[in-house]
Length: 563
Image 1 (spheres, rainbow, N blue to C red):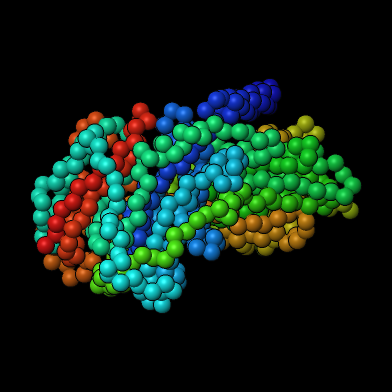
Image 2: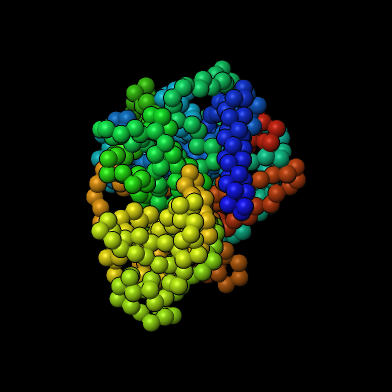
């Protein structure tokens, strides 16, 4: 009876998930657009571009609830991608960083952002921002303009809105002094940046209010039949299977991403042999193995889909850098500062937030054997016989059969057990029995009927190796290995503390970027931020930018001096 109740529950749960997705995609508000707020638009080699993403419903101007994944690319003037990153969207927002190495040529670049759902509407449906990179270690192709030809206005242009108030405890600070900033803003999602400003060209960055105007002209999505679904609850891995002689419909395909808490999924193909896996547990390992999970698997071939890519052919880049000879000193100072900061990177680097360890699909075992707690046997056959009391095997001319002792009388009802090595399903039992038992760390067992995805098993037997490095010996078309682009992990951005005796620390501090807080959440009350100034003097600008929960965009700046 437990088996049938569990099966009914699984069916109802699956139908509920499908209904939820259908309801969202059939609503009138299916479009989404992305806006990027960056810490600057001009960078010297060795500096870091920080960015905050807002994925917006362009009908209501609130955070989109459709896509869970966003993509950011830095495009060179030759319209080739030099950096490609993937972001997890949480409540429609994400943040990350791009280091500008000395291998990047001086020139104009584009920072673009999109979701797969946006590209489903149009391959040119992405947000873009102009970025300038100056590489002082290489010859600049376009010569510097004379000072007289420098543009009349080089500073970022933006209109402050009274809804955001920025107050500092001082107008002028000394080196390594604590600055206290009070922010009053409507409830919403904002970013806070404090960065030195100089005479080097800063292009006019599109602020959130202008973005609203830009997207309002086209705020409905056309859902094209046959195109990929949005990455609604996680990343999607898609593909199809082929066969010369057999039907490709309703075939089981397995995906494994190996790590301490491995990702394992089973799905059925549709009438055309297509399959879709949703990675909703945010695995870190980029290596994935996809295989046909059928007795006649050798008759099939796995073909993986490529992600949709934006059409970059219509991108227009400014001609020349528009920097003048008078910028030379600022460029040299920033370049020296970047080199010093990078020399002390290990003392100042950002830290990664702790990753949430997701339990494996079976949650917990009924029984787990740590083999070092027992007398070791050299073969898997002996290990099963002498240690794994719930497991048995037999062998005939067709090969091995493994079964769980409690359910031999119901093997036809439940089917064989699911056997895994490091999360990879073992379909050829010769591989299991030929595997050296001394390399196995532990064995977990579920000795009960188990329904997972489209399959029913008599239980689960999971072998874990000492180094989690099991590789299938089979090299055939029905099994495919691929490297997935992993989303950036959340960071805690470096913010030094010079209180007390820390002020006299003999580590040079040449930060141009004093503070970067991408996830500033305001609640109609005064928020207090703080940071310490560096050894760099000059004018620094505080920037607050974001979108309220009511769909209003705001942008405000304030400057202070460090002497």
